[in-house]
Image (cartoon, rainbow, N blue to C red):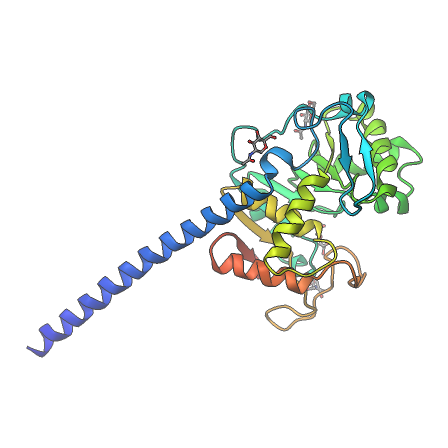
Length: 301
Ligand SMILES: *[C@@H]1O[C@H](CO)[C@@H](O)[C@H](O)[C@H]1NC(C)=O
Ligand SMILES: *[C@@H]1O[C@H](CO)[C@@H](O)[C@H](O)[C@H]1NC(C)=O
Ligand SMILES: *[C@@H]1O[C@H](CO)[C@@H](O)[C@H](O)[C@H]1NC(C)=O
Ligand SMILES: *[C@@H]1O[C@H](CO)[C@@H](O)[C@H](O)[C@H]1NC(C)=O
């Protein structure tokens, strides 16, 4: 008698567990799906992440991302240099790894896991290596200030050599974020093309970044400009089946209370003012708990 009551109780518990698991899975799938659809409807990285011949017309005036008065007219010469279309036209990107520069990647042994993704996104010409961060790169951002600081615009071969470690990955620049970025970005494209024609240099669409900025501000994110990390995580949420996020960690000690440097590749500290990394991180945690992306915060084994 006691035993059968006990068994019935166990059975009920199992049923509740199974149902709640199913509800959870459905909830996760719906959430992932919803944020993907929302981002696509609002911002459309799929069709407008960067300027292409397809989404930009000759003589089109494009606005600057951070200015309401300046625009730039795309002449025929620049138009011929734009890529035809996106490599992902008509399909998704599969499993993506978005690799930030956070010091938690140091000694993480995550290289293999990162390299197993279908599409790997990196930032700011960050160094690659097989042990901790992986080598595969499909899209990497470059800030024009890095080209200036390294004097890479002086000798075309210097820049070509610097970016050759990323194989044929696309290099993406915020050419129309500020007016002082534009000439240097166009020169970079013109100089690289004859030397490494297989390596695309592309320009973020300021329209895309403006709508994305509005999207997150409506959701309570307060900062002057989104970090490029957060921009490309948003792009990945729209285009990738699964989004794995590495090296995003805005604190100076890790989950095991060990001190971590700000970057995995240098000793520089955080800059204050433009971005609000802890605020962005809070959004990443929310997206992680909704199952829309996976944050990797521990070493890989
Ligand atoms: C996204 O942009 C592409 C190219 O401009 C367009 O064909 C497509 O309809 C857009 N999708 C949405 C949901 O706005
Ligand atoms: C990484 O490992 C090296 C060698 O074991 C050690 O000296 C260093 O402190 C470690 N760094 C971090 C951030 O864990
Ligand atoms: C890069 O592109 C060149 C020319 O298309 C090709 O020969 C080479 O194999 C490519 N390299 C990689 C790493 O895909
Ligand atoms: C890989 O890069 C990390 C971070 O810069 C560094 O600590 C580690 O020693 C590097 N490993 C190799 C094999 O180069």
